[in-house]
Image (tube, rainbow, N blue to C red; front, side, top):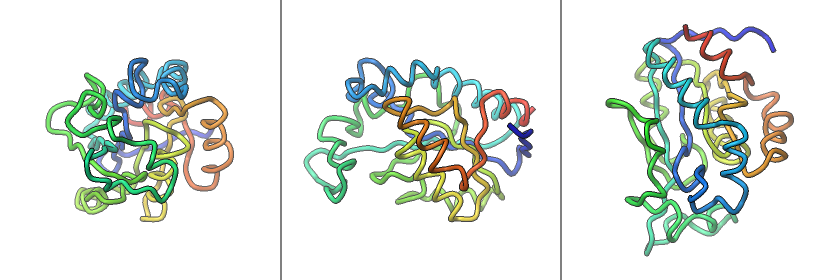
Amino acid sequence: MPELTLTAPTTAILVVDMQNDNVLPNGAFASTGAAEHAASQDVIGHVRTILEAARAAGAPVFHNRIVSYPGVAVGGANAPIFTMIGPESLKRGTWGAEIIDGLTAGDEIVLDRTRMSAFNGTGLDSMLRNLGITTVVVVGVWTNMAVEHTVRDAADHGYRAVIVSDATSSINADWHAAALNYALQNIATITDTGAVVSALS
């Protein structure tokens, strides 16, 4: 793995869907294998480590949540993934939709959306540009879904995209590996937590 270089003032951390329903054993999607794979990756611990390094270096952090609005089918049914969300899972205002305790800090921005990519339906792009950000480091869940969509959109928007292999997880190791080893090989720099922490410090 080549040495990673990051400049804190022009690098932002994008935390994707680190929500109780998506990651924890008592979350709505635990039966899919998501909680088990997240635990095997120690995704919570690795994300926390990266956030601590980013805050110490002065790199901005943006948290993203995918949410459902029960009673109004605004998420749509045009793709199977959207029918998986709601009416109770990831319900805005509930424990399941909340970000895992201890990951947010201070006045870090939390953006809600109903699409896969953190760029779709939020003000993320303009916020990053206003801060002079040129590189985004993407962590969170699920690697082959919202994380992959976010990384692809970041590249299409002109950002250098970095994905952290051990600070991301999916519903199983195969789907995680497919995203990292095939889908994103020509889209992003793939690295690990230790390299990000070293580069930021």
